[in-house]
Image (cartoon, rainbow, N blue to C red; front, top):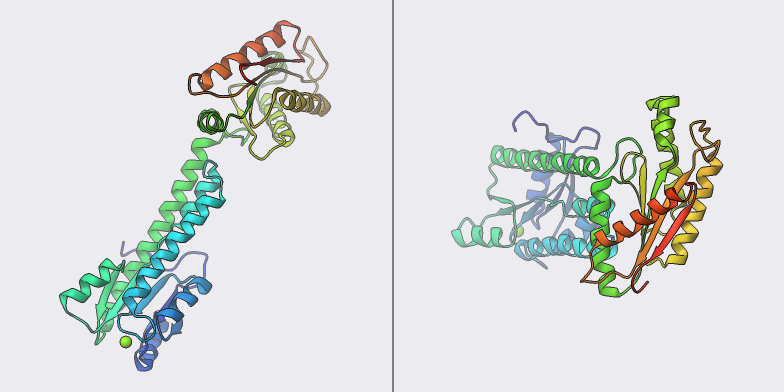
Length: 345
Ligand SMILES: [Mg+2]
């Protein structure tokens, strides 16, 4: 840890919020902190500390235990409550099922370290500080080298936490996204379908699924080579994604040349409308395909299925239905879609 700078690489120096009712101490703290290269904002009491915390979003809070208006222990508890409230509102506002939602929540849940400064060097006050949620404490009179080291260590820890969060988010992205098309991958498809199944079974609303396959794609690869095949997959994936209509719709790469569209709250007629638009859009790309027996351009075969999910059925039933419909679309001559309406839809 000692080799890690407490200064983030691309950001301004760390911002320290100092709350102490003793002006002399504040001046000394400011001087010491600024010597370390940190930025400092001073406040007089716990109430002002809460207000400043929301506005300036400090990297660390130095909190005196005994202050008028609101003491450090109460302030510390309320700072944690702010973090909790932020988390709750994030959970209420964002779609926790999306990768973006997870990212937002993990950012909001970042914990700002709180260092309590107290002249109350008795055991009870130390316990109270930790019970209130303080990360660490120092005592007055301030032992400056100790304060410097503790601050440095807390800032380093916060930095490491942020780096781990960034790595975690990058991994989460990699685990859920198809590298070639940048669309959600099969794993994400499965997760999303399962979650939506449960939601819609509770609500009694329909769920539609489209499975689609690029016609004669093997011949496309054989004729134009795999790099061209990859470009074709990227173009088709992008246009399908563009044509998805509702924000809950998820377009995923399902397999090699197969894509899937999950459409919650969508009746069969809505799914037909989307499928027709997607098929037309792919045709309009006019990607020349001499290996195709049905068109001079790249085309899609699609299988549609719609059900109202129930606890007795499973997402696999919907996939099987869509897959059968896709098979019929291919058997019927490709470049078309077939729709299968399930129970209750
Ligand atoms: Mg005081």
